[in-house]
Image (cartoon, rainbow, N blue to C red; front, side, top):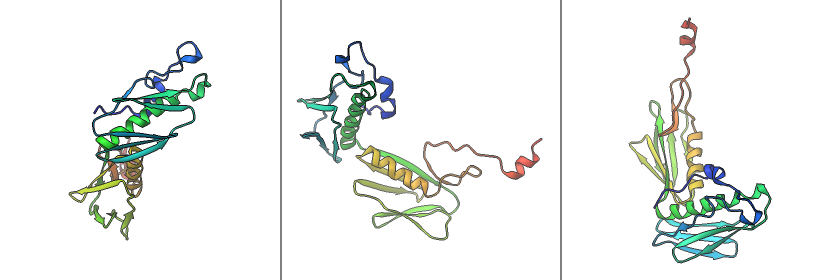
Amino acid sequence: MKKPVSIKLVANFCVTYGKEDKIMSRLGKTPIPIPKGVQITLEGKLIKVKGPKGQLEKKLAEEISVKVETEEILVIIKEKLPPEKRPLHGLYRSLIENMIFGVTEGFEKRLSLIGVGFRASMKGKDLDLKIGYSHPTLVKIPDGITIKVEKSTQIIVSGCDKQLVGQIASNIRACRRPEPYKGKGIRYVDEYVRKKAGKTAAKGAP
C-alpha cells in the first residue's frame, strides 16, 4: 500500500474552487482505496477500521461524513462552510488513510542510545533504560504499542496508531534528550544533532 500523505502537508492541498458549493480540496476529494483484508464499519459519526495489524476507531467531525463503497472510501464535507472549516476535508481524509495504513502495514519509530554504558531492555511490559542516572528509568508502554530492543542500544517503537507511536517515541526520547556537546542521550535514528563547541574550545578561538 502506498505510504499515506503527512498530515502536515494537508493544508497545502486545501484549495477552494469558485462557488461555495464546491468546497473540495485536491486531497480531500481523492477516494481512499480499501485493501484486501480491511473492514470498514460506520456507527453514526464513529468510523472503525480493522485489519491484520489491529483495529482503530475515530469520531468524525460534524462537518464530515464518510461513504464506504466496495473498494474505496469517499470523505465528504458539508457545503457552504466558513474558510477555517474547509481544511477539515483533507485532514480527515489523511487521518482515515493513516488508519488504513496502520492496520495493514503499521508505523514505527527508531531510536538510538548514545553514551557509555547506555542500554535498554524490557522489564515485563515496561521499557527499562540505563541512561547515566543513579537509578533506572522505566517507561510505561500502553496497549497497542510494541517495543523491540536490538543490541541493547537500538529501540524500535511500532504499532498501528501513528499518533500513539509518535507519542511513545517522543516520551522515550524525553527521558534523556541528546545534549549538544558530546551528543549523549536518546535520539531518533535519522535525527541530526547539531553540536556546540565546548568552553575550552570557545576560549581558544581567535
